[in-house]
Every structure is written in structure tokens, then in C-alpha cells.
Length: 395
Image (tube, rainbow, N blue to C red):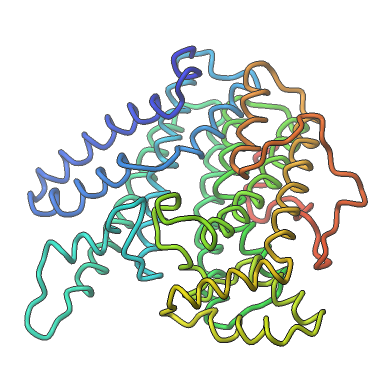
């Protein structure tokens, strides 16, 4: 337990390596080409990057609820954390295919890497094969994640709760990804719809469900679990809003992807929705013209991207999103304070909730009722319980 507390990512990586070594060996014995091209590439991608944020939320939620002391429980938590990393691999690989993104974590994305390995035949760009193979890599990652979960939960006292959460997480991940694509296809511009996408695509999958899994493993009481999940929900939305800001304003070496991809692809982000909302309210036709011309345009010059950034700043959208992130983190900490949590998990979880959103916040800060709404009129967080069958985790 102490060794995991000291370095959660390293402990998860040890579990991941063991699982992936076994899986790659099995795949290679089935067929060496399959093992080399897909299974080994899946393993390399999973191990080569990422902040292990989902495993850390799971572990510190477990510890804050008094769990992790028994070796068997700690081992189960690390294996479930490894399964979360595998489903993250599935999500990222498929996301890059859908977005036609050639870079991920500062390296070629999986579909681009495969396409480079196999030069195109006459009349073929080679990208079709790379994309098709990458879809199979994502499918394989999801299959391995499910295999790990099924083998891990079989003997757990909290098996039913953990399995229900896992089922919900998978469906929510797909729902969030689809709504993201749907927003691109339909040109969705509502700030409320953008928050909904952030909730399903990131808040639940990246923070709230991992926290809930840790609480379920510890067999936490319903009140503590509800407070933890509410804290995770707020921080998770803030996490996605921060990611939206980084995607536009951060340098590529920070994000591992070209800056401005969300703008070029027409992603229905809250940042852009707020900019439109404010431009309409202020009668700012110049800002609307820039957004209409550039968002979803595909290729943009550096000068055009700079114009978009200036517009997002001038309309006040960037500052509004920063402010909302701070509100959400404050609410997250208020929910966390309502839970009966234990040391050292309580402090580490608090720090992690803030760090995920890129905010340094006073631990005593809390959102007042007047802060519960934002300038665009949407609620600062979805206060309702998460949708779907996993509401049963609190029982």
C-alpha cells in the first residue's frame, strides 16, 4: 500500500506491463504479424504516454474511503486501473481515426504510424489501411480491458457495483464521442449542449466514474459515495473545459497535438459556444464573421488561427471559461468537504481534483449560491445523478 501511495502511476504501469506482456505473447502465438502490427503497437501506445489520471482518481478515492490496506484489494484496484488505461487507449486511437489526427502525445498517431509502415499500393493513399487497422487496435484494447475487468471482479465483495459502473462507463464514453461528432456535423452552437458533451465525454469517463470505482471497491457508504461523485463531476467538467482552452491556446509540445485542431474540425466546445453567445449578445458581427469563416474550415493558416484566438479573447470567452473552471473547482471542493474521508487520500484527492482542472485553489474555497450560474445562463454543473444503470453503485 505504501509503495502505491508513493507513486501510483508507477504501480499501475507495473500492472499494465504484466497484463500487456501476457496479451502480446498470446497474440503473437496466434499470428506473428498480428502480434507485431496490432498487439505490440497497442502495448507500446498504452505504455508510452499519458498521465494515468484515471488510475490516480480511482486509487485516491479508494484510499480516502479507507480501502487499499488489504493486498488483494490493492491488487484488484491496480488491475482495474490498468483496464481504465486500456479503455483510454481504445478511446484515443478511435478518436484520432475519427478526427483524422496524425499526432498524439507528440508522436504519430496509431493510424498514421501503421500507414507509414505500409507504403501505399498504386491508386491507394495508404491511409485507408492505416485507419482500418487502427480501428482494430482500438477494438482489441477494449476487448483486453473487458477481459481484465471480468477476471478481476469475479471474486470481489463489491463485484456487482463495480461491474455496473464499468458497463455505464463504456456506454457513456461512446455517447459522449457521438455527441461530439454530432455537434460537428450539425454545427451545434449552444453552450448548454457543449457542457452536456463535456459531461458525457470527459467528466463522467475521466473523473467521476474512476472516483466511483474507487469508492465501490472500498464499499463506501452511499452519502460518502454521492459526495465523491459530485466532486468528480464538477472537476471532470472543469478538466474538459481546461482541455478545450489548451487545445486552442497551448503550444503543441504541451498538448502533443497541433494547436487549433478543435477549431479546424469544428468541435462543439464550450469555449466557442460562449464566444458566439457573447458576440450575438453584443452585436459583434466582426467576431461572428471570424467564427463562421474559421470554425470547421479544415485548413487554417497561422494568421487565421491567430485571428480566432484574438476573437476568443476579445469577446471575453477565454476569461469566461477560466472563471467557470474556477467556479467548478470550488464546487468540487465543497462537495469533497461534505464527505467523511480519511488521510492521506482526502488531501491527495483534493489536490488531484484541482490539478486536473489546472487550478490552484484555496482548500477552504466554496462556491456560493450566487456563483451557481454563469454568464451564458447555463448551470455550473449537472446536479442530477448520472444517467443509466450505474446509479445502482450507491446501494
